[in-house]
Amino acid sequence: MSEVPEEAARLLEGVGARRLRHALTLLTDDRSWDADALVRATAAPRRAVDALLAALGDDLEDGRIRRDRVAAYRPLAAPAIIADPVAHLLPKHADAVAEMAALIAAAPRARTALDHVAATADTAVRRALLLGARFWLGSARLLCVGDHDLTSLAVALTHPGVEITVVDIDDRILEFIGAEAARRGLPIRCRFADLRLGLPPGAREWADLVFTDPPYTPEGVALFTRRGLEGLRDHDSGRVLVAYGASEGTPALALKVQEAIGPLHLAYEAIWPDFNRYDGAPAIGSASDLYVLRPTSRTWKTLGSTTAGTRIYTQGPQAVEAPERPLEAAAEPADLLVGDWPKGFAPGTPRVHLATWLAKPYAGRTGDVVIALPAGYDALLPRVLLASRAERVRVLTPATLPRSLKGVLAAVYHLKTAPGEIVASRVEPPGGTGAVLRHILDRPHGRVANSWREGLIRHAAGDLTKNQARARIQEAAPWLGDATVLDLPAHRLADLPDAVRRTLTP
Image 1 (cartoon, rainbow, N blue to C red):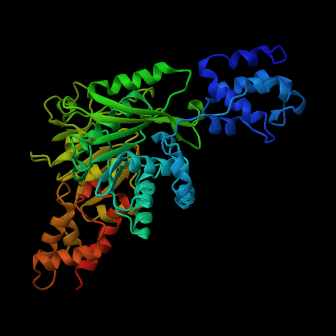
Image 2 (image 1 turned 90 degrees about the vertical axis):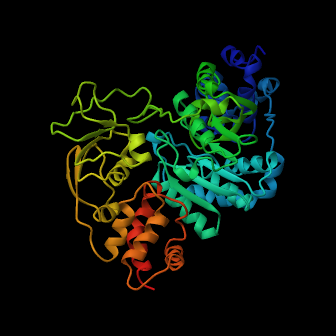
Image 3 (image 1 turned 60 degrees about the vertical axis):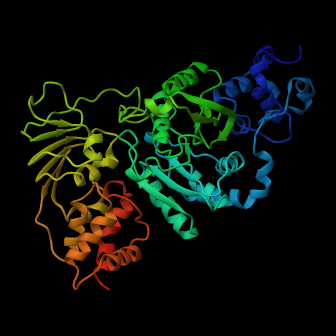
Protein backbone atom coordinates (compact mmCIF):
# COMPACT_ATOMS: atom_id res chain seq x y z
CA MET A 1 0.00 0.00 0.00
CA SER A 2 2.91 2.32 0.77
CA GLU A 3 4.10 2.03 -2.83
CA VAL A 4 0.92 3.65 -4.14
CA PRO A 5 0.63 7.46 -4.13
CA GLU A 6 -1.22 8.60 -1.03
CA GLU A 7 -3.93 10.51 -2.92
CA ALA A 8 -4.63 7.54 -5.21
CA ALA A 9 -4.97 5.24 -2.20
CA ARG A 10 -7.34 7.71 -0.54
CA LEU A 11 -9.59 7.86 -3.63
CA LEU A 12 -9.83 4.07 -3.64
CA GLU A 13 -11.02 3.80 -0.03
CA GLY A 14 -14.59 3.23 1.13
CA VAL A 15 -17.67 1.36 -0.08
CA GLY A 16 -18.29 3.89 -2.86
CA ALA A 17 -14.97 3.25 -4.57
CA ARG A 18 -16.06 0.23 -6.60
CA ARG A 19 -16.25 2.15 -9.89
CA LEU A 20 -12.78 3.68 -9.44
CA ARG A 21 -11.32 0.30 -8.52
CA HIS A 22 -12.85 -1.00 -11.75
CA ALA A 23 -11.14 1.86 -13.59
CA LEU A 24 -7.87 0.86 -11.96
CA THR A 25 -8.39 -2.72 -13.15
CA LEU A 26 -8.72 -1.48 -16.72
CA LEU A 27 -5.60 0.67 -16.38
CA THR A 28 -3.56 -2.38 -15.35
CA ASP A 29 -4.47 -4.20 -18.58
CA ASP A 30 -2.56 -3.91 -21.85
CA ARG A 31 -4.97 -1.44 -23.48
CA SER A 32 -4.57 2.35 -23.32
CA TRP A 33 -7.46 4.27 -21.79
CA ASP A 34 -8.41 7.94 -21.87
CA ALA A 35 -10.74 9.57 -19.36
CA ASP A 36 -13.86 9.45 -21.58
CA ALA A 37 -13.40 5.73 -22.29
CA LEU A 38 -12.98 5.00 -18.58
CA VAL A 39 -16.17 6.92 -17.78
CA ARG A 40 -18.16 4.93 -20.34
CA ALA A 41 -16.73 1.61 -19.17
CA THR A 42 -17.15 2.13 -15.42
CA ALA A 43 -20.00 4.66 -15.01
CA ALA A 44 -17.73 6.65 -12.69
CA PRO A 45 -18.27 10.44 -12.85
CA ARG A 46 -15.78 12.29 -15.03
CA ARG A 47 -14.57 14.40 -12.11
CA ALA A 48 -13.70 11.27 -10.08
CA VAL A 49 -11.91 9.68 -13.04
CA ASP A 50 -9.90 12.85 -13.65
CA ALA A 51 -8.93 12.94 -9.97
CA LEU A 52 -7.74 9.32 -10.08
CA LEU A 53 -5.69 9.84 -13.23
CA ALA A 54 -4.08 12.92 -11.71
CA ALA A 55 -3.31 11.07 -8.47
CA LEU A 56 -1.56 8.26 -10.36
CA GLY A 57 1.02 10.78 -11.54
CA ASP A 58 4.15 9.29 -13.13
CA ASP A 59 2.84 5.75 -12.61
CA LEU A 60 0.54 6.40 -15.59
CA GLU A 61 2.09 6.20 -19.02
CA ASP A 62 0.37 6.12 -22.43
CA GLY A 63 -3.07 5.65 -20.87
CA ARG A 64 -2.17 2.71 -18.60
CA ILE A 65 -0.21 1.83 -15.47
CA ARG A 66 3.48 1.38 -16.22
CA ARG A 67 4.38 -2.30 -16.52
CA ASP A 68 6.90 -2.08 -13.69
CA ARG A 69 4.23 -0.59 -11.40
CA VAL A 70 1.29 -2.94 -12.11
CA ALA A 71 2.09 -5.28 -9.20
CA ALA A 72 1.79 -2.42 -6.71
CA TYR A 73 -1.73 -1.58 -7.87
CA ARG A 74 -3.24 -5.01 -8.37
CA PRO A 75 -4.26 -5.43 -4.70
CA LEU A 76 -6.40 -2.27 -5.09
CA ALA A 77 -7.98 -3.24 -8.40
CA ALA A 78 -11.41 -4.84 -8.61
CA PRO A 79 -13.41 -5.82 -11.71
CA ALA A 80 -16.99 -4.68 -12.18
CA ILE A 81 -19.75 -6.90 -10.83
CA ILE A 82 -22.95 -5.31 -12.07
CA ALA A 83 -26.38 -6.81 -11.38
CA ASP A 84 -27.81 -6.35 -14.87
CA PRO A 85 -31.20 -8.12 -15.07
CA VAL A 86 -31.00 -8.80 -18.82
CA ALA A 87 -27.27 -9.06 -19.60
CA HIS A 88 -27.67 -12.81 -20.12
CA LEU A 89 -30.24 -12.18 -22.88
CA LEU A 90 -28.19 -9.70 -24.90
CA PRO A 91 -25.91 -12.16 -26.78
CA LYS A 92 -28.94 -13.64 -28.55
CA HIS A 93 -29.84 -10.20 -29.93
CA ALA A 94 -26.57 -9.16 -31.54
CA ASP A 95 -28.38 -8.43 -34.83
CA ALA A 96 -30.76 -6.03 -33.09
CA VAL A 97 -27.85 -4.26 -31.39
CA ALA A 98 -26.08 -3.88 -34.74
CA GLU A 99 -29.24 -2.53 -36.36
CA MET A 100 -29.80 -0.09 -33.51
CA ALA A 101 -26.19 1.11 -33.80
CA ALA A 102 -26.80 1.91 -37.47
CA LEU A 103 -30.08 3.68 -36.66
CA ILE A 104 -28.50 5.78 -33.89
CA ALA A 105 -25.67 6.78 -36.22
CA ALA A 106 -28.20 7.89 -38.87
CA ALA A 107 -30.57 9.68 -36.47
CA PRO A 108 -30.80 13.49 -36.24
CA ARG A 109 -28.10 15.17 -34.22
CA ALA A 110 -28.70 15.86 -30.55
CA ARG A 111 -30.15 19.22 -29.50
CA THR A 112 -28.53 20.50 -26.35
CA ALA A 113 -31.47 22.82 -25.64
CA LEU A 114 -33.62 19.67 -25.29
CA ASP A 115 -31.02 17.92 -23.09
CA HIS A 116 -30.43 15.25 -25.71
CA VAL A 117 -27.73 12.66 -25.00
CA ALA A 118 -27.91 9.48 -27.08
CA ALA A 119 -28.13 6.13 -25.31
CA THR A 120 -25.91 3.36 -26.63
CA ALA A 121 -27.29 0.74 -28.99
CA ASP A 122 -27.08 -2.06 -26.45
CA THR A 123 -28.90 0.14 -23.90
CA ALA A 124 -31.83 0.58 -26.30
CA VAL A 125 -32.00 -3.19 -26.84
CA ARG A 126 -31.58 -3.97 -23.12
CA ARG A 127 -34.49 -1.65 -22.37
CA ALA A 128 -36.60 -3.64 -24.81
CA LEU A 129 -35.45 -6.95 -23.34
CA LEU A 130 -36.23 -5.78 -19.82
CA LEU A 131 -39.77 -4.87 -20.85
CA GLY A 132 -40.19 -8.32 -22.36
CA ALA A 133 -38.69 -10.09 -19.34
CA ARG A 134 -40.68 -8.14 -16.75
CA PHE A 135 -44.05 -7.78 -18.51
CA TRP A 136 -46.28 -9.74 -20.87
CA LEU A 137 -46.06 -7.90 -24.19
CA GLY A 138 -48.26 -10.11 -26.36
CA SER A 139 -50.84 -7.39 -27.04
CA ALA A 140 -49.40 -4.53 -25.05
CA ARG A 141 -49.31 -0.83 -25.86
CA LEU A 142 -46.17 1.16 -25.14
CA LEU A 143 -46.04 4.95 -24.94
CA CYS A 144 -42.61 6.56 -25.35
CA VAL A 145 -42.72 9.99 -23.75
CA GLY A 146 -39.92 11.55 -25.77
CA ASP A 147 -37.71 9.17 -27.74
CA HIS A 148 -34.43 10.67 -28.88
CA ASP A 149 -32.85 7.32 -27.87
CA LEU A 150 -35.03 5.38 -30.38
CA THR A 151 -36.24 2.97 -27.70
CA SER A 152 -39.45 2.56 -29.68
CA LEU A 153 -37.56 1.06 -32.62
CA ALA A 154 -35.62 -1.29 -30.33
CA VAL A 155 -38.84 -2.57 -28.75
CA ALA A 156 -40.53 -3.01 -32.13
CA LEU A 157 -37.53 -4.93 -33.51
CA THR A 158 -37.39 -7.34 -30.57
CA HIS A 159 -41.12 -7.60 -29.72
CA PRO A 160 -43.14 -7.23 -32.97
CA GLY A 161 -46.51 -7.62 -31.23
CA VAL A 162 -46.23 -4.39 -29.25
CA GLU A 163 -48.23 -1.38 -30.45
CA ILE A 164 -46.19 1.79 -29.89
CA THR A 165 -46.88 5.52 -29.79
CA VAL A 166 -44.07 8.08 -29.66
CA VAL A 167 -44.74 11.64 -28.54
CA ASP A 168 -41.95 14.18 -28.91
CA ILE A 169 -41.37 17.90 -29.37
CA ASP A 170 -38.60 17.30 -31.93
CA ASP A 171 -40.18 17.00 -35.38
CA ARG A 172 -36.90 15.62 -36.77
CA ILE A 173 -37.04 12.64 -34.40
CA LEU A 174 -40.68 11.98 -35.27
CA GLU A 175 -39.90 12.01 -38.98
CA PHE A 176 -36.91 9.70 -38.56
CA ILE A 177 -38.74 7.16 -36.39
CA GLY A 178 -41.79 7.27 -38.65
CA ALA A 179 -39.74 6.70 -41.79
CA GLU A 180 -37.73 3.83 -40.29
CA ALA A 181 -40.84 2.19 -38.85
CA ALA A 182 -42.63 2.43 -42.22
CA ARG A 183 -39.59 0.97 -44.01
CA ARG A 184 -39.61 -2.05 -41.70
CA GLY A 185 -43.38 -2.39 -41.29
CA LEU A 186 -43.22 -1.71 -37.55
CA PRO A 187 -46.38 -0.69 -35.64
CA ILE A 188 -45.21 2.74 -34.45
CA ARG A 189 -47.23 5.94 -34.71
CA CYS A 190 -45.66 9.34 -34.07
CA ARG A 191 -47.33 12.41 -32.58
CA PHE A 192 -46.05 15.91 -31.90
CA ALA A 193 -46.37 17.20 -28.35
CA ASP A 194 -44.84 19.85 -26.16
CA LEU A 195 -45.25 17.94 -22.92
CA ARG A 196 -45.28 21.15 -20.88
CA LEU A 197 -48.73 21.73 -22.37
CA GLY A 198 -50.11 18.20 -22.36
CA LEU A 199 -50.37 14.91 -24.24
CA PRO A 200 -52.02 14.61 -27.66
CA PRO A 201 -55.64 13.42 -27.36
CA GLY A 202 -54.89 10.05 -28.94
CA ALA A 203 -52.15 9.30 -26.41
CA ARG A 204 -54.22 9.92 -23.29
CA GLU A 205 -55.27 6.79 -21.39
CA TRP A 206 -53.95 4.70 -24.28
CA ALA A 207 -50.95 2.70 -23.03
CA ASP A 208 -50.23 -0.23 -20.76
CA LEU A 209 -46.57 0.70 -20.28
CA VAL A 210 -44.65 3.97 -20.53
CA PHE A 211 -40.96 4.58 -21.08
CA THR A 212 -39.27 7.96 -20.71
CA ASP A 213 -35.75 9.35 -20.46
CA PRO A 214 -36.60 12.94 -19.47
CA PRO A 215 -34.56 16.09 -18.86
CA TYR A 216 -32.60 15.46 -15.67
CA THR A 217 -34.06 18.28 -13.60
CA PRO A 218 -36.64 17.75 -10.85
CA GLU A 219 -39.11 19.72 -12.98
CA GLY A 220 -38.36 17.67 -16.10
CA VAL A 221 -38.53 14.25 -14.46
CA ALA A 222 -41.75 15.08 -12.60
CA LEU A 223 -43.40 16.47 -15.73
CA PHE A 224 -42.51 13.57 -18.04
CA THR A 225 -43.54 11.06 -15.36
CA ARG A 226 -46.87 12.83 -14.93
CA ARG A 227 -47.49 12.80 -18.67
CA GLY A 228 -46.63 9.11 -18.74
CA LEU A 229 -49.21 8.44 -16.06
CA GLU A 230 -51.79 10.42 -18.02
CA GLY A 231 -51.07 8.10 -20.94
CA LEU A 232 -51.87 4.88 -19.04
CA ARG A 233 -55.15 3.14 -19.70
CA ASP A 234 -54.37 0.31 -17.28
CA HIS A 235 -54.69 1.93 -13.87
CA ASP A 236 -54.22 -1.34 -12.00
CA SER A 237 -51.15 -2.95 -13.56
CA GLY A 238 -49.65 -0.22 -15.76
CA ARG A 239 -46.07 0.89 -15.15
CA VAL A 240 -43.94 3.92 -15.94
CA LEU A 241 -40.22 3.28 -16.51
CA VAL A 242 -38.03 6.34 -16.01
CA ALA A 243 -34.33 6.76 -16.77
CA TYR A 244 -32.64 9.23 -14.44
CA GLY A 245 -29.06 9.76 -13.35
CA ALA A 246 -27.07 12.05 -11.08
CA SER A 247 -23.40 12.12 -10.26
CA GLU A 248 -22.36 9.70 -7.52
CA GLY A 249 -21.03 12.68 -5.61
CA THR A 250 -24.32 14.64 -5.62
CA PRO A 251 -26.98 12.49 -3.93
CA ALA A 252 -28.87 15.67 -3.02
CA LEU A 253 -29.79 16.08 -6.72
CA ALA A 254 -31.27 12.59 -6.84
CA LEU A 255 -33.18 13.36 -3.66
CA LYS A 256 -34.67 16.51 -5.22
CA VAL A 257 -35.90 14.47 -8.18
CA GLN A 258 -37.43 11.82 -5.94
CA GLU A 259 -39.09 14.53 -3.86
CA ALA A 260 -40.49 16.07 -7.06
CA ILE A 261 -42.21 12.84 -8.06
CA GLY A 262 -43.18 12.01 -4.47
CA PRO A 263 -46.56 13.81 -4.69
CA LEU A 264 -47.55 11.36 -7.45
CA HIS A 265 -47.69 8.59 -4.81
CA LEU A 266 -45.87 6.00 -6.91
CA ALA A 267 -44.54 2.70 -5.62
CA TYR A 268 -40.85 2.13 -6.47
CA GLU A 269 -40.80 -1.47 -7.70
CA ALA A 270 -37.15 -1.35 -8.73
CA ILE A 271 -34.18 0.94 -9.29
CA TRP A 272 -31.39 -0.62 -11.38
CA PRO A 273 -28.20 1.43 -10.95
CA ASP A 274 -26.27 2.37 -14.10
CA PHE A 275 -28.69 0.43 -16.32
CA ASN A 276 -28.68 3.08 -19.07
CA ARG A 277 -25.38 3.96 -20.77
CA TYR A 278 -24.78 6.98 -23.00
CA ASP A 279 -22.39 8.35 -25.57
CA GLY A 280 -21.93 11.52 -23.56
CA ALA A 281 -22.92 12.97 -20.17
CA PRO A 282 -19.55 12.21 -18.49
CA ALA A 283 -20.51 14.35 -15.48
CA ILE A 284 -22.90 11.57 -14.40
CA GLY A 285 -20.62 8.74 -15.51
CA SER A 286 -22.32 8.44 -18.94
CA ALA A 287 -24.90 6.35 -17.12
CA SER A 288 -28.27 6.61 -15.43
CA ASP A 289 -30.47 4.43 -13.27
CA LEU A 290 -33.70 2.83 -14.41
CA TYR A 291 -36.75 3.33 -12.18
CA VAL A 292 -39.79 1.06 -12.45
CA LEU A 293 -42.73 2.97 -10.98
CA ARG A 294 -46.20 1.66 -10.28
CA PRO A 295 -49.16 3.95 -9.67
CA THR A 296 -51.34 3.51 -6.60
CA SER A 297 -54.95 4.45 -5.99
CA ARG A 298 -53.72 7.79 -4.60
CA THR A 299 -51.83 8.51 -7.82
CA TRP A 300 -54.94 9.08 -9.88
CA LYS A 301 -56.31 11.62 -7.40
CA THR A 302 -53.25 13.81 -7.95
CA LEU A 303 -53.54 13.94 -11.74
CA GLY A 304 -55.49 16.81 -13.20
CA SER A 305 -55.31 19.40 -15.92
CA THR A 306 -52.29 21.08 -14.35
CA THR A 307 -49.62 22.56 -16.58
CA ALA A 308 -45.91 22.86 -15.94
CA GLY A 309 -43.67 25.84 -15.98
CA THR A 310 -41.68 26.39 -19.11
CA ARG A 311 -38.30 25.76 -17.52
CA ILE A 312 -37.57 22.05 -17.34
CA TYR A 313 -34.17 21.71 -19.07
CA THR A 314 -30.57 22.03 -17.92
CA GLN A 315 -29.46 24.01 -20.99
CA GLY A 316 -30.86 26.51 -23.49
CA PRO A 317 -33.45 29.29 -23.17
CA GLN A 318 -35.82 27.09 -21.17
CA ALA A 319 -33.21 25.88 -18.69
CA VAL A 320 -34.25 25.95 -15.05
CA GLU A 321 -31.55 28.51 -14.27
CA ALA A 322 -31.83 30.56 -17.47
CA PRO A 323 -32.37 34.31 -16.91
CA GLU A 324 -35.84 35.69 -17.31
CA ARG A 325 -36.47 37.48 -20.60
CA PRO A 326 -39.21 40.08 -20.12
CA LEU A 327 -41.89 40.14 -22.78
CA GLU A 328 -42.10 43.20 -24.96
CA ALA A 329 -45.79 43.89 -24.72
CA ALA A 330 -47.81 44.47 -27.86
CA ALA A 331 -48.72 48.09 -28.44
CA GLU A 332 -51.76 47.30 -30.58
CA PRO A 333 -55.11 46.43 -28.96
CA ALA A 334 -56.38 42.86 -29.16
CA ASP A 335 -59.57 40.92 -28.51
CA LEU A 336 -57.65 38.12 -26.80
CA LEU A 337 -54.20 37.55 -25.29
CA VAL A 338 -52.74 34.05 -25.42
CA GLY A 339 -49.80 32.90 -23.30
CA ASP A 340 -48.14 34.44 -20.24
CA TRP A 341 -48.50 38.23 -20.13
CA PRO A 342 -47.33 40.77 -17.54
CA LYS A 343 -49.78 41.56 -14.79
CA GLY A 344 -51.52 44.84 -15.38
CA PHE A 345 -51.03 44.77 -19.15
CA ALA A 346 -54.22 45.46 -21.17
CA PRO A 347 -56.65 45.23 -18.24
CA GLY A 348 -60.00 43.81 -19.21
CA THR A 349 -58.66 41.91 -22.23
CA PRO A 350 -59.49 38.18 -21.99
CA ARG A 351 -56.52 35.84 -21.57
CA VAL A 352 -55.97 32.19 -22.37
CA HIS A 353 -53.11 29.88 -21.47
CA LEU A 354 -51.19 28.25 -24.32
CA ALA A 355 -52.23 24.82 -23.07
CA THR A 356 -55.92 25.76 -23.28
CA TRP A 357 -55.45 27.39 -26.69
CA LEU A 358 -54.03 24.16 -28.09
CA ALA A 359 -56.38 21.80 -26.23
CA LYS A 360 -59.74 23.07 -27.46
CA PRO A 361 -61.30 25.73 -29.70
CA TYR A 362 -61.71 29.14 -28.09
CA ALA A 363 -65.43 29.68 -27.54
CA GLY A 364 -65.57 33.47 -27.85
CA ARG A 365 -65.49 35.60 -30.99
CA THR A 366 -62.07 36.91 -31.87
CA GLY A 367 -61.05 39.37 -34.53
CA ASP A 368 -57.51 40.07 -33.33
CA VAL A 369 -55.44 37.71 -31.22
CA VAL A 370 -51.95 38.34 -29.86
CA ILE A 371 -49.93 35.32 -28.77
CA ALA A 372 -46.80 35.42 -26.62
CA LEU A 373 -44.52 32.56 -27.63
CA PRO A 374 -41.19 32.74 -25.78
CA ALA A 375 -37.85 31.29 -26.84
CA GLY A 376 -37.82 27.53 -26.42
CA TYR A 377 -41.33 27.12 -27.82
CA ASP A 378 -40.24 27.31 -31.47
CA ALA A 379 -41.89 24.05 -32.54
CA LEU A 380 -45.27 25.40 -31.43
CA LEU A 381 -45.27 28.35 -33.82
CA PRO A 382 -47.16 26.71 -36.72
CA ARG A 383 -49.47 24.96 -34.25
CA VAL A 384 -50.55 28.11 -32.38
CA LEU A 385 -51.39 29.71 -35.73
CA LEU A 386 -53.39 26.71 -36.90
CA ALA A 387 -55.22 26.52 -33.55
CA SER A 388 -56.76 29.96 -34.15
CA ARG A 389 -60.08 30.84 -35.75
CA ALA A 390 -59.39 34.58 -35.53
CA GLU A 391 -59.28 36.90 -38.52
CA ARG A 392 -55.84 38.20 -37.54
CA VAL A 393 -53.19 36.62 -35.35
CA ARG A 394 -50.03 38.31 -34.18
CA VAL A 395 -47.37 36.08 -32.62
CA LEU A 396 -44.57 37.67 -30.62
CA THR A 397 -41.72 35.19 -30.90
CA PRO A 398 -38.06 34.86 -31.84
CA ALA A 399 -38.95 31.68 -33.76
CA THR A 400 -39.26 31.44 -37.54
CA LEU A 401 -41.66 29.33 -39.53
CA PRO A 402 -40.24 26.21 -41.18
CA ARG A 403 -40.16 26.71 -44.93
CA SER A 404 -41.79 23.30 -45.44
CA LEU A 405 -44.97 24.42 -43.64
CA LYS A 406 -45.53 27.74 -45.39
CA GLY A 407 -47.50 26.03 -48.17
CA VAL A 408 -49.90 24.48 -45.65
CA LEU A 409 -50.35 27.74 -43.76
CA ALA A 410 -50.98 29.60 -47.03
CA ALA A 411 -54.32 27.77 -47.30
CA VAL A 412 -55.43 29.70 -44.18
CA TYR A 413 -53.31 32.84 -43.83
CA HIS A 414 -51.46 35.58 -45.56
CA LEU A 415 -48.23 35.84 -43.56
CA LYS A 416 -46.05 38.85 -42.84
CA THR A 417 -42.88 38.44 -40.85
CA ALA A 418 -40.74 40.97 -39.02
CA PRO A 419 -38.02 40.62 -36.38
CA GLY A 420 -39.64 39.19 -33.27
CA GLU A 421 -43.14 38.80 -34.66
CA ILE A 422 -45.34 37.16 -37.27
CA VAL A 423 -48.68 38.57 -38.41
CA ALA A 424 -51.15 36.16 -40.00
CA SER A 425 -54.32 37.45 -41.71
CA ARG A 426 -57.00 34.94 -42.66
CA VAL A 427 -57.65 34.56 -46.41
CA GLU A 428 -60.77 33.53 -48.29
CA PRO A 429 -61.17 29.76 -48.69
CA PRO A 430 -59.64 28.58 -51.99
CA GLY A 431 -61.22 26.15 -54.42
CA GLY A 432 -60.26 22.66 -55.57
CA THR A 433 -57.63 20.94 -53.46
CA GLY A 434 -57.35 24.05 -51.34
CA ALA A 435 -61.01 23.82 -50.35
CA VAL A 436 -60.64 20.35 -48.85
CA LEU A 437 -57.35 21.31 -47.20
CA ARG A 438 -58.94 24.43 -45.74
CA HIS A 439 -61.86 22.34 -44.46
CA ILE A 440 -59.34 20.22 -42.55
CA LEU A 441 -57.23 23.10 -41.24
CA ASP A 442 -60.27 25.05 -40.06
CA ARG A 443 -61.00 22.17 -37.65
CA PRO A 444 -57.58 21.78 -36.01
CA HIS A 445 -58.75 20.23 -32.75
CA GLY A 446 -60.78 17.44 -34.33
CA ARG A 447 -59.59 14.26 -35.99
CA VAL A 448 -58.13 14.93 -39.40
CA ALA A 449 -59.72 11.76 -40.79
CA ASN A 450 -63.22 13.02 -39.96
CA SER A 451 -62.83 16.55 -41.30
CA TRP A 452 -61.04 15.25 -44.39
CA ARG A 453 -63.89 12.85 -45.10
CA GLU A 454 -66.46 15.62 -44.70
CA GLY A 455 -64.50 18.02 -46.90
CA LEU A 456 -63.95 15.39 -49.57
CA ILE A 457 -67.64 14.53 -49.78
CA ARG A 458 -68.51 18.23 -50.00
CA HIS A 459 -65.92 19.31 -52.59
CA ALA A 460 -64.97 16.25 -54.67
CA ALA A 461 -66.37 15.85 -58.18
CA GLY A 462 -69.27 13.40 -58.29
CA ASP A 463 -71.07 11.81 -55.37
CA LEU A 464 -68.92 10.06 -52.78
CA THR A 465 -70.19 7.86 -50.00
CA LYS A 466 -68.56 7.98 -46.57
CA ASN A 467 -66.98 4.58 -47.16
CA GLN A 468 -65.57 5.66 -50.52
CA ALA A 469 -64.13 8.81 -48.97
CA ARG A 470 -62.60 6.81 -46.11
CA ALA A 471 -61.00 4.40 -48.56
CA ARG A 472 -59.41 7.22 -50.56
CA ILE A 473 -58.05 8.84 -47.40
CA GLN A 474 -56.64 5.55 -46.11
CA GLU A 475 -54.86 4.96 -49.41
CA ALA A 476 -53.44 8.49 -49.56
CA ALA A 477 -52.50 8.78 -45.88
CA PRO A 478 -52.15 5.37 -44.19
CA TRP A 479 -50.18 7.11 -41.42
CA LEU A 480 -53.11 9.29 -40.34
CA GLY A 481 -54.79 7.26 -37.61
CA ASP A 482 -56.58 9.38 -35.03
CA ALA A 483 -54.28 12.40 -35.35
CA THR A 484 -55.45 16.00 -35.15
CA VAL A 485 -53.89 18.80 -37.17
CA LEU A 486 -52.09 20.00 -34.04
CA ASP A 487 -50.36 16.71 -33.16
CA LEU A 488 -49.31 15.72 -36.66
CA PRO A 489 -45.52 15.79 -37.03
CA ALA A 490 -44.31 18.66 -39.23
CA HIS A 491 -43.42 16.42 -42.18
CA ARG A 492 -46.95 14.99 -42.19
CA LEU A 493 -48.44 18.48 -42.09
CA ALA A 494 -46.25 19.34 -45.07
CA ASP A 495 -47.51 16.20 -46.84
CA LEU A 496 -51.18 17.14 -46.45
CA PRO A 497 -51.64 19.21 -49.65
CA ASP A 498 -50.33 16.43 -51.90
CA ALA A 499 -52.22 13.76 -49.99
CA VAL A 500 -55.46 15.75 -50.27
CA ARG A 501 -54.84 16.20 -53.99
CA ARG A 502 -54.61 12.44 -54.45
CA THR A 503 -57.96 11.87 -52.76
CA LEU A 504 -59.69 14.21 -55.22
CA THR A 505 -58.77 11.91 -58.10
CA PRO A 506 -60.36 8.44 -58.18
